[in-house]
Image 1 (cartoon, rainbow, N blue to C red):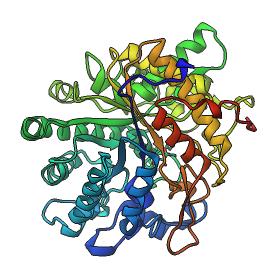
Image 2: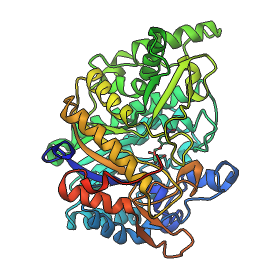
Image 3: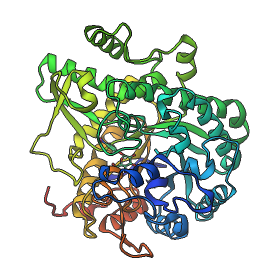
Image 4: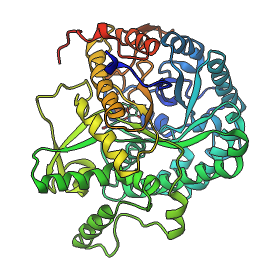
Length: 476
Ligand code: PNW
């Protein structure tokens, strides 16, 4: 029984992001984002050719969202702010008061209901004018991100105490390297992804240092990044396969985390070495991986107050130079093991033990920092009776509890992706992650609690995985 109990003070929340839920894409002087541009100009890139023009209409219905949060009993709500809703030009020359008002209303409503705001500054909706300057491949974006961060701290920092600078740098890099339906969908594989992450790391660091310098003393909040961290498992336990998988972990998870969280800073040594050698073989006189100056290494190193981790699945690898996507450069390819159940998303396999392994690897690599799980979730087709989702959560949360209680991993909170069904990027509305169903054919975007919503409200109330769900029959 007690194995199902969470430690005292453990925090629970749910997450969403601006483009995925808000709609109102051009109302009240909001500027155009790269997701507006992509979904309007290249609908064929989105599976059902849909857009986030209306999405869940949370720009109008945010009070209803807060009622759902209240019903769940969550301690916090992780949402993101739309950069072009605050700064329509991308720059701080024009601050859109209607955008400031919207987030003030949301934040005040949350606090009035006893729910802490956890705010992501950037969840993929870049102002289009900044994309026209090259987007994240242009290092000048670090200046503009710092300017944007200052506007956010100054307007909301009196009430927001938890900040995530940037959500999933690697997913952003995918929009510059892999045909996955992610904006800006300008594909320069082998180059774009490294430039993008480089600028993002510097941008994150500049926003962190700004807070440290000008706001922390008076506002007393915490700032970090939310990184996508899947577990990478070799298909056999031979020494060479384990070595290749470890290299892939460093080039996947370590790519973003090592510069910020390791004692030494900079990209992982194995990544610099492996890519440097590969680029030389390819005839380049310089590595495709950009390098940091000594000052930049120090600027980025240590820019965290906690670590935000988005975890969904495990990737099984074997050594190969024919891997798809960003795996090519890592010297591995991925395969799918049929014995693990699939979610509706082609990349999401249910491998609960991978969560525990990942948390242990992170604790070991980065000296056991305090971790907030900023996303974890399962996709289906929107069933109200979502037993497969409940089953996923039970299994993943059991592994989380083992990591915390048996292995000593320092995880202090957990966030469900997502509060409600929403625009799932390149998959449009064909894959659903919500605890609440949203009827996208209804002009009022009616929200209905799924079985998983009931599961979580019981879990949060009792601070434990509710036993009555353990016997649930599932197709897994
Ligand atoms: C995350 N993968 O994206 C995002 O932060 C959310 O906005 C999104 O809705 C959610 O997870 C579900 O997709 C991911 O291929 C996209 O491993 C792709 C992957 C992981 C996360």
